[in-house]
Length: 128
Image 1 (tube, helix red, strand yellow):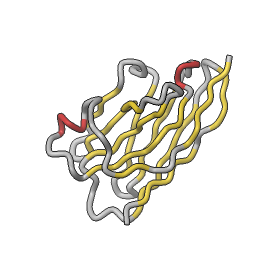
Image 2: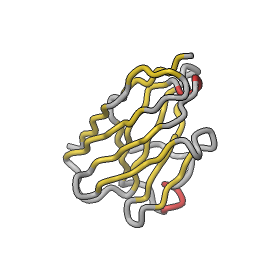
Image 3: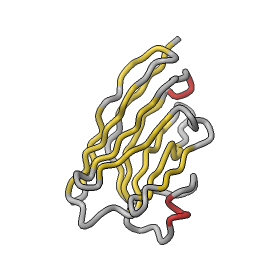
Image 4: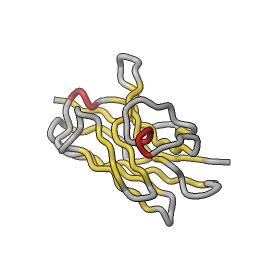
C-alpha cells in the first residue's frame, strides 16, 4: 500500500521560507514521477513542481519558478520542496504525489496530470 506523509507546513510571513518533506512508503518500485500539488482557496489543484526520478529533470509552475526547489532521495523515497520568498498567494494545502501510471517524462514534467497517489496534505499559510 503506497503511503505518502507530508510535513513541514506552517505559518510564515511573506518573504520567509519553509521546507516541506514527504516520506513515501510501500513503493512497489521507484516512482515514475513525483510532485507537489497545491489546493488553493479557489478550489483548484495545481502542480507546483514535479520531478522525473529516472534522470532528475524538474518542472515548476511559472508562479514558483526561481523561488521553489524540488529535490528527491530515491533511496529513501522522500521528496522535499524548499520554498523561499513566499508570497501571500502561496497560501494553500500542499500535497505530495507519486505516480506509476504516466507513460512519458513529458507528462510528468507538465502541469496537466492527475496523480495516482497523494498524501493528506500540509497547510502553508503566508501572512503579511
